View 1 (cartoon, helix red, strand yellow):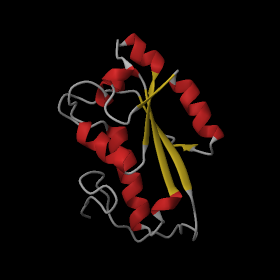
View 2 (view 1 turned 90 degrees about the vertical axis):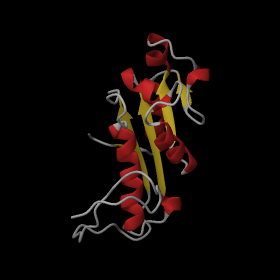
View 3 (view 1 turned 180 degrees about the horizontal axis):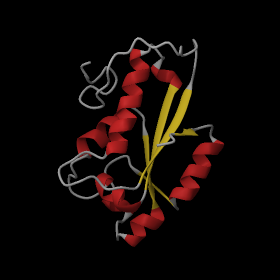
Length: 148
């Protein structure tokens, strides 16, 4: 089966078309969050950022209205370097996700540990007190957490 990108995130998030038997109900809404702590290898995209793009593209292909899909990523550990600094490999992917309305939230505790300031974050990336508080707030707002 061939994997292609789009239609929501045109340059990222390759997915395959599937003859699914588990139906997504009409009018279903998705408020879903991802967690990433592992920094991508040099020159590689952060896999969780790619997963967020894939999730959005998959749901679009399944005819879920884009207005019913809200996605957030909580970034901690070494992954903070994938969303900060001078043009990390994931910079264009981050920009595409932010443009689509995805929230990318950095753990302030990890940022402090790695000496990453709020001003170092890529445009649109948010700084939280911690990953724990970001996840707690997202869950209070009805976001489910991706289990892997």
